Length: 144
Image 1 (cartoon, rainbow, N blue to C red):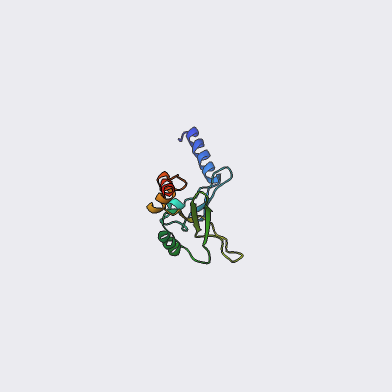
Image 2: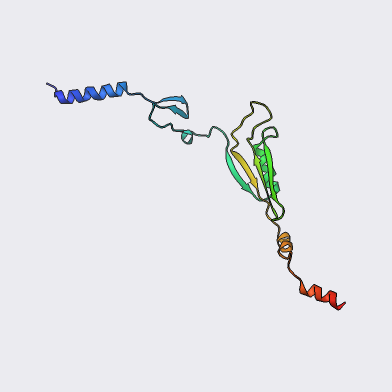
């Protein structure tokens, strides 16, 4: 004869398992789950990502142009420039998957290349001496 308490526990467990709402796949990397459960993106478990996304920092124009050319297209990429000429600062941002020209050309805008040009040694020397009084040059002018 079977133990009635054990039998009842097994019946309850079977009923719960049968009646409980279970998650189901909407796509290979997105699952729908019952209310109160959290929704998890499982893209990181897939062999490849769904799409390209990156944030890259570059310091020379050749690399910046090469990266934009390799990953972007003229129809969907946008390049922005932010400059503060008083401080000598210039930065470019290339949004590779920017909104296109078409009405339904929306993109995620999360594949970005940033260019902050490195200053040459000559430029740093030149600007390092800017606005510094040069007593020797003034003395020569006075003597002549």
